[in-house]
Length: 136
Image (cartoon, rainbow, N blue to C red; front, top):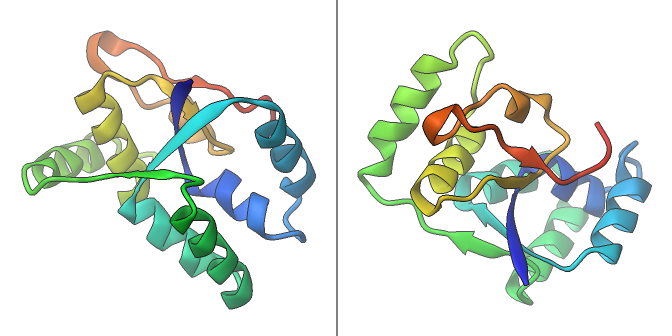
């Protein structure tokens, strides 16, 4: 099964029925076979932006294996800082930077995101992310 990084936008949409992207994200994720990978900063951002009951449902989803949480290392912080400085005009938030670090470290270019910023961010060799989510 292929893996893809996932940003907070689709996760929020999946667990917030009032989100404008709820139906298309739910449909997309129900019809693809992907192992979703994210980071602790994305989990934090998702929980902070969801209503409490929905955040609890999200945490339960993660506990049941709905996502794999990639670990950031102490050394990754300097890369996150360098990325945030490089993309200061976007600006790049900490959660996005954590996903870019994981992509760089693991050679991953697939992402599921509603955020158009991932069209701007570049990987090694100026490679672009491939956003698998057909909506934006």
